Length: 117
Image (tube, rainbow, N blue to C red; front, top):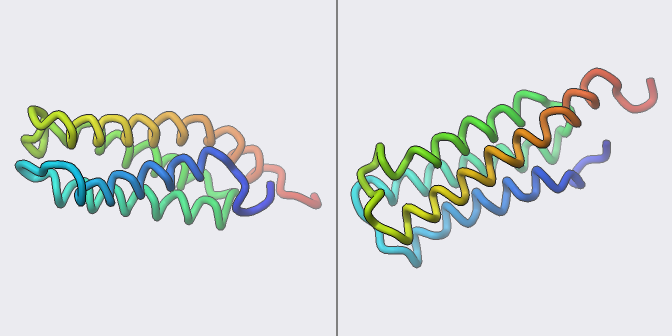
């Protein structure tokens, strides 16, 4: 598979960027600012890394792990009652988990059967 083309990784980049940037327009509470900023940048970064190196299966698992952290962040960071920021975290986390899960098999196939062999 070519670099920079897998839609799952672009979805992860978009979700991570949205999570990180959302701190500018959502009301923050508890640990939401740092959690969304750090986890959003981590999710977007792992998506970019996966786009640049599409055969790395470990990056797809990283999407899932970071997405799961975003899913539980509202409870861990004590901001689950803040509707806007909590839903942002849950939705971006779900995108990370689902897109990562959908990309594991194609990445594994590419890792096991590189182009030209």
